[in-house]
Structure formats: C-alpha cells, structure tokens
Image (cartoon, rainbow, N blue to C red; front, side, top):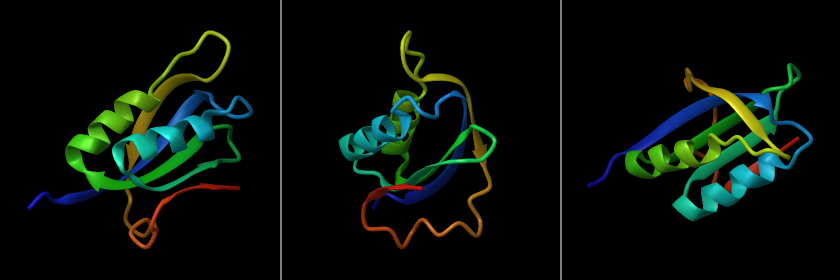
Length: 96
C-alpha cells in the first residue's frame, strides 16, 4: 500500500495578487492532492498538501513556476508540518 505524506511548503517570489493560489489549486486537482493554499503577511504563500509521494513530487515541481507576466517563484522551502491540520481536509482549499 502506498504511504501518504504531508508537506508544508513556503513559496517565495512574486506570488500574491497574480492568481498563484488558483494555479496551485488546479495543480492539486491534477494530482489528487488534499490540503490548502493561503497568502502569508510577508508576501509568501503557504501550501499544505497531503498525498502519495510521487504525486506530491510532481505537484511540487508543477507549482515551481516562473511566468513572464504572472507568478514568479524564487524558491520553495519545506517547513515542519507538525501541528498543521492538513489531514482533516477532504479537498484542496484556498484560504484567506
């Protein structure tokens, strides 16, 4: 049986106000990822994700983009997901 993983990602770059959260949500649907995406006060975006390792790897690759007239991801760092309630989500949500 495939083990489910949890990841908490902090995305830095020009990722607020350019449709990035919707882009991440579409990618989550493509790979069957559950979780959330939300803007953080410092201008970064937080992504909490649950899924199979191979799906999470593909998802993470897809959301690491650099579009000329849109989102520009400079870095994605993995953070400690301990204490973050991702597992209870049935779908992928855009949070305020």
